[in-house]
Image (tube, rainbow, N blue to C red):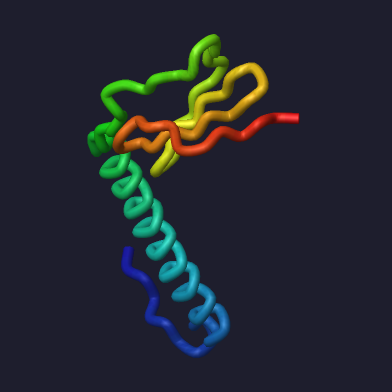
Amino acid sequence: MSMPPEDETTAMPPDVRFVKRLVVVLTSVMIVGVVLIVGLLVARITQTPAPVALPDSIDLPADTTPEAVTLARDWVLVLVADEILLFDRDTGALAHRITLP
């Protein structure tokens, strides 16, 4: 069974052909985009994290008990009862004391 030849009565109008091509192109772009995103996620997840550089020791002032420690790029912040102590991340030396109200 062969297809009858397309003549002017059975041919698709130009608008429909344009929409058909547009759907094919957009579907292809979406598939490539999803594959690219999945590939980037897999590549990012499988990377080993950078090692955290910490000072060898931090000397807290006498009679202080740390309640929380936060690591920043250049600082180690230690929260004690009524103060925030800022230590230099490279040397571990006390740089600032901020009294909380």
